[in-house]
Length: 518
Image (cartoon, rainbow, N blue to C red):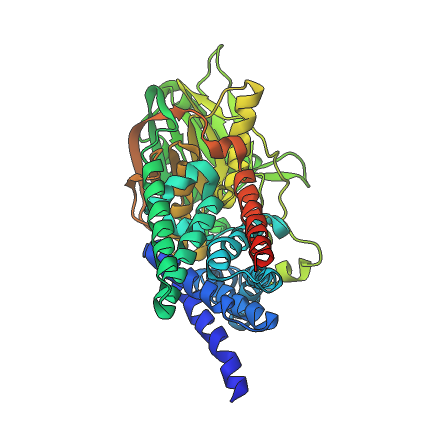
């Protein structure tokens, strides 16, 4: 019976963790994230032993990541060639490993509660939220980082989105955890009939949502320059044929037709739209595209792997400009933040990669800070595929442009191929991540993807236009970029880390004064 009782709270935490997937895109029930966090915080608070607090956090994290990242199974099994059992086991182990971070967040919050005897308000509104945000931030860079499904992403359409340009997605995670803590205090105080705490919880809850909504009305950036004409192409090339040598010519012909259909100020293809090196292209293929660029006055942004030597090749964006004495001819962006196992092999895991059939598995890494490229009055800052889940890196690049006096990007551009994950929630989740980058930086985001979701996102994080997934087509529109520096561009994640540490220190100090007064 005692053993069954000890399993009750971890099981509740596990089931609650599964529910969190419905707070993210495409479902978007952001209030559910507050509800789930409130339950977890309350569960951790009532535990009597540290290992139970750890297990509850681990169960919650494992379930959340397992339910939210199940689509990785498709890349491993369907396209990677790994057998189903091994692929499923790999996803389960990844979820359990990632679940360790929320587990340690819960453990440290519990230990601090025991050490300083922090009561309901201090623990739920200060201690637990601070550790939650710190460990989400830690997940953004440990072992190269995987901040996918960070709590803050659930709130792109909520009042808390107003905190994005101030403290980024982890700042929203902190604010959401405090708001959830206030919800937990309210529920527990109703149960224990502590009217003073009920009022405090309501004040905190209403204040944060109201303040976030007020911040959403702040104009951090302003429209600058004349609009430019953009064409974003979505080739809808099936992943199983994308690297098939027999299908290469068909793909090349398709993209040549799409590119040359009509001119634009800039025409953008998805990541690796051209899946082979320029040296391997059919004779005359690039010459044909260059002739179109020169004749039409268009700029062509081409997703293509580039090889500098037999051992150094990059996942790149190559921009071709019309021939002119005053303009550059070529611009090159090399992907900086590479995907483990897909684009580089972590030490000791070559055996794992050898089990998969994914080509081009060991790329060279581009520099973190690479300049934007010009298109008339605008400057476009590119990133490739899941690089846009690292908001700190994009903020760093923009900050460097401001501080160094270089041209400052007015538009963000993401090119992706996430056909590796099929027609799953990975597509809307990635779109939601791109929306967060627009919110943080106050800049429009342009997305050109292979199978979806190709979209134009404005500086407020709103999707203005998008193509349905798994169709062949293009988006054609005019857009003006923005200029200005948000607090998040200026400070990055420093603000949320400092605020989290301050909350922990303040809770400890308040507990110490309270104990002295007893």
